[in-house]
Length: 212
Image (cartoon, rainbow, N blue to C red):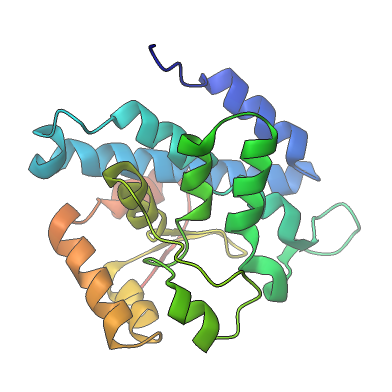
């Protein structure tokens, strides 16, 4: 049986339905758009992917558009209460699992829902959850497919911080190193595997600064 992926209209409608405000929609939807652009660029440049007949670029792009759908549930201020847009820092780590449950609840299936579950950092392992005392069920929240891994990696080059910004390799090196040598090595292996996107062009197109 041929699998049918959701189209862009269905994806946009889901974003609109769960966004608590237009300001929240703008930040999250734009970020997902950027991650889909980066995913496409990296896939096009990576011989390990475009020579792989099993790699499904269409699935990866859908995953990029939906990986952060759970973020709508972790705003402290969504811009509709007169306060500046802000995330709830204590609950932010939950956005992946919340998005996973949301996508399953909506009937989008495990294959797509896994993009939300498994994109945090450069892979969140069971021992990380325990050691850091994170409010998650101890488990591995790591990509299980090349498509999920590529989206997780692409996600690292753009931030929904206020104001939103692109993240240069040098900045992400520092971020990854904060969580230990093993985490940094995982990040560097991803860089070696997929290369770097041209964030300067994207920053100009989306009118966002680059953080170095």
